[in-house]
Length: 584
Image 1 (cartoon, rainbow, N blue to C red):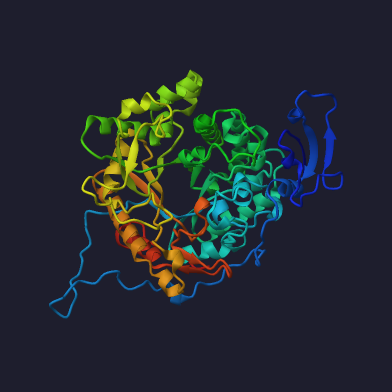
Image 2 (cartoon, rainbow, N blue to C red; image 1 turned 60 degrees about the vertical axis):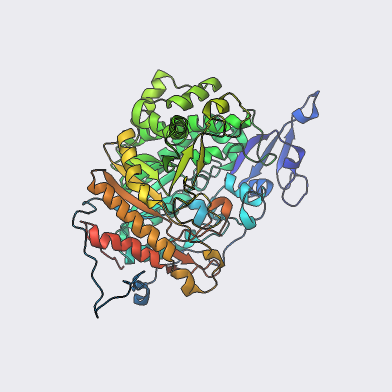
């Protein structure tokens, strides 16, 4: 594949990965004629192939020792034995331990969907295989090395690109009925647009067919942060409205290919997070002119338009599966009962979940406090755009890992709003995981996830708040939740790694919290545990471990952790639909 594109970049950008100047042998340069008062204004049209594009902007990538698709093998019965109970009754007075009775008021109703989740860049590996183009995360991990811990990359990852058959067989053997994964946009469109990569589509064809073969229903996310690099370099990626058409063209290919084979679709994963990645590190991407502090709001504006267009497209194609996007955040608890803390909490909702939920679930427009700010940037939706966005979700999907306390900034909300140099401006709210009595909201997770505490007591109230604030006829799905076991990366013995009591307790408490919410009338329709296996946790590399399976990153062997059995046990006890292990 070849693509003609224009470069207007620092001279360093015209040097390939070996340090030599591009020549007709490794890329053709055609210099525009004429004079320029400023030499930095010179541009060049360069025709290079995909491999040369990788070399120019990313450099060499690692490859796995296993680089062909691996057939599934039976899961040994010894691996299907759950661990002993987490805790035993203290000081029993008789020979028999007391029995904990089932709560008859709890149930996961028939049709409740549950499973495990992953994302393409975090587990696939095979970075350059079969025509994949580079994404911005390839640059983050290779060139802008301050982004990731230990200079970790997704080049090889868990090698799921070749191990997917075994991965699906393993979850099916435990009776897991849904698998949520993302498709790599830059595999399907190596440049984000233009020629379609048929090899990538054939790969996802087989991944989806393997799911169905094992009785596992696929849940697909179109975009999980791995933006095709070319689109960022060409027009600034999500900072330009031009991306809306390119995303919809990508969605059209994927929707058209897999249609009703997919039970649930998510257009975007956590736009609050990937928009907050802007501004990107300087000197690694083409320059943009939008003020750095405002870039995330331009990103969010175009995400909403792209999501809405893709949703309308999917419905026009007659897809039977639900379509939504994945919001994220946590319950926002006022630190005190002061008026200023109450205002700060509402501002936090407006600048987080409400940023994307209000336009989709309420009225097509931004919530009040966010709107007050973004309107000054010219980011306002027309009447037609509001109508386009409003109602573009079949359920409310939320990645809800934890909760936190929120309060006014030091000096108060008003003082913050009057001072644009305040580090908390324009949101003007602050947050902590320590309550006024000096105790944590709950046990802390791994040191590489300082944002995560076990705050499952707040889950029922959080789910109730979502239902009351952003009602959705399709109910609420907890589309990600999980736990980074403290210091798991320091364990050297496999049996120690597999017994993860902190994660076991997190899943036990979280599942009970969902059951409580359902019993109290909250329409929770599904949940997806993060993650199917340990993986590249973005900027934190491979240090924090969220997986319910351990992965040996040398041999690629997978092993169930005890928490996986805890998660599944909730459905064995309380699901109206039976948990049925599948062996093929």
